[in-house]
Amino acid sequence: MDGKQIPSSDSSNRQDIQRRKARSLLLVLAVGFAVFLAAAGALNYILQPTTLRIAVGPTGSEDHAVVEAMAEAFADESRTVLLSTIPTAGAAESLGLLGNGKADLAVGRADLSMPSDAQTLAVLRKNYVVLWSFSGSGGKAARKKTAVKIAEVADLAGHKVGVIGRTAANASVLRVILSGSGVESDKLAVAQFGTDEIEKLAQDRTIDAFLAVGPLDSKITADAIAATARTRGAPKFLSIDASEAIALRHSRYEAEEIPPSVFNAKPAWPEE
Image 1 (cartoon, rainbow, N blue to C red):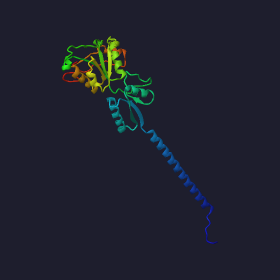
Image 2: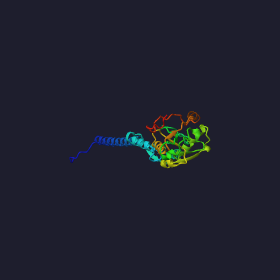
Image 3: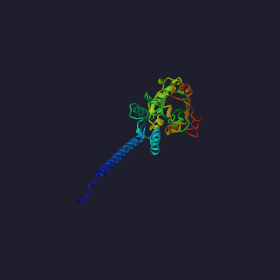
Image 4: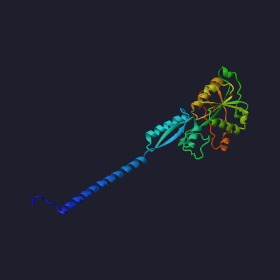
């Protein structure tokens, strides 16, 4: 013998078994790691926040500001839902985007045409209809008209009403009020002004009464009342006596009272 050791067959078998075990362990580890990565990826996908597109407008409006604040709050606090704002020209366009699938949510008005499959998720605010004429008391220009020409809704016949907001919904709600009060809408003229045309509205001497639609804390409504008071005299608010009957016939509307002094404290607008 030359002193070299010849491994026995048992030793060789043991080494083969150990190598196979090592390969099996590596394979198990590799498969386990792959399964872990797949599970982690699936979990990460499942836990990704859902982004909902919400149409709202016009830009700079109270509705737009509220939704922007909501979007920021969701971004800071929610891990499951995010809001992506789609600016629009107004409620009608917002509902149109919802109807054609370009938005997941929309801020609209109940008295506008809603998509057939739309559902109300939340009421952001209530809009109040404010109708007023003028008393004739006030500045020099206002004193030219000393008598109250319009004391109630029925007196609107034969006159011209200035409607704030160019949306068709505002003109529509005026027609509903007129009809419920026994006044034919074709017996008076209606002129619509943009929310940025308050001064133009107040200076228009052909207008005898005014209509605004918005929340009770609406700056637009308050500014319009103040502007017409400067040019035409103290406002004379018109009570919609048929409001409860209108609400019964039109489920989209409700009959509610506007609190005294909500638009001005001294003098109180309205007084009651």
